[in-house]
Amino acid sequence: MDAALLCYSFTVGKSGSGLWWHKVQGQLNEETFLSYDSNNNCHVIGVLGNKLNATKICEKHSDTLKDGVDLLRDEARLCCWHEVDGHFNEFWDFGLNGHKMLHVDTSTGEWTEVDPGSSWMKEMWEKNRDVTAFLKMTSQGDCRAWLQEVKSHWEEMLESTGLQQGLVLWDKGKKEEDSRGSRMESPGVMEEGTE
Image 1: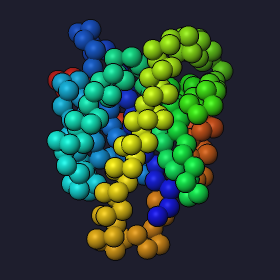
Image 2: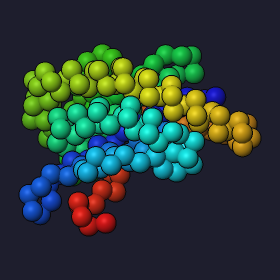
Image 3: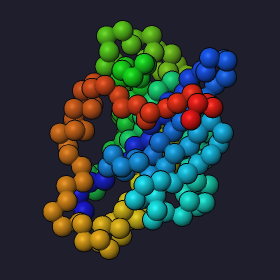
Image 4: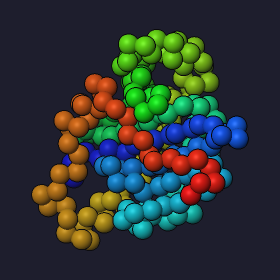
């Protein structure tokens, strides 16, 4: 199997009434399989979601996702993957109003300002030890474990449907484009109570 890219998009904001809301979506190779919202509702969705044990996967993800939205209070995206040679990679991207501002390579600890006006955000996050510890722990620990679990279900699904042959699961050109500062993908969050 080619490299599998696991990402979690965090969006946190305030409603018109001043209440905080959040939405997190988990994706494997850009296919959404998990949704977690302000009411602490966790759902598995899509083709991959149908292969996962909803209770088990949500129990494993919920605490970490809740910690993430409590700490981050912005737009953020965690991604991790194994290269074909087995090397593990991970990163966090931070955004504001749908634009990527910062890229963090947690394996090296390097913070890159993607947007020229993002130095304030970089300084704020770099100085926050709780945030930097969370970023490293989730990208190198949680994301790695989640990737293994979700990827195994994805591979089973592909084998059972015969789709694995000739399927390109991840375009490295897309990854490189994303790391250069393209617009962040918004998970389509609606304010609480507007569904």
